[in-house]
Length: 137
Image (tube, rainbow, N blue to C red; front, top):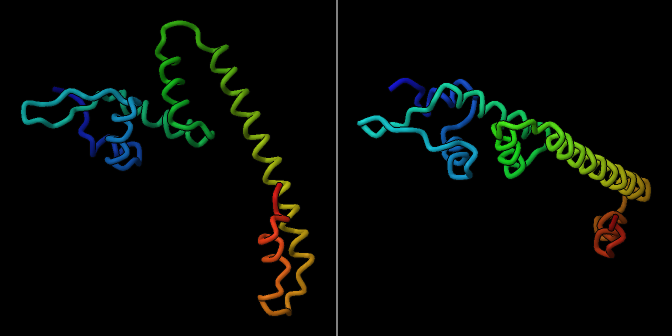
């Protein structure tokens, strides 16, 4: 039986073998056939799929959405409009997170400006603001 062991797939993709097991349990990777001695033998294409998963994660897609992207990828029909729709939604989500992080940054800068830095911690304006919920965005 021709293919790759779990360790070989892990080395080629720089992914821990436990991660490969997890991908199988999540349905991202199909369970590979086994040899007569019960070793898993992954098709060579598995490397490509794992690299796709890792790149999609780098772009901010969670595993649930990656599973859907993989299904679209192998659907046999032109999935591009659906992929574009999902990518636009991801981009919108990222824009919202950036806005939230920018607001958070502004709040932290304001708190730092209020801090005289030479008072005891019991009168720290930053801790007081957190305690009094003045830090809500």
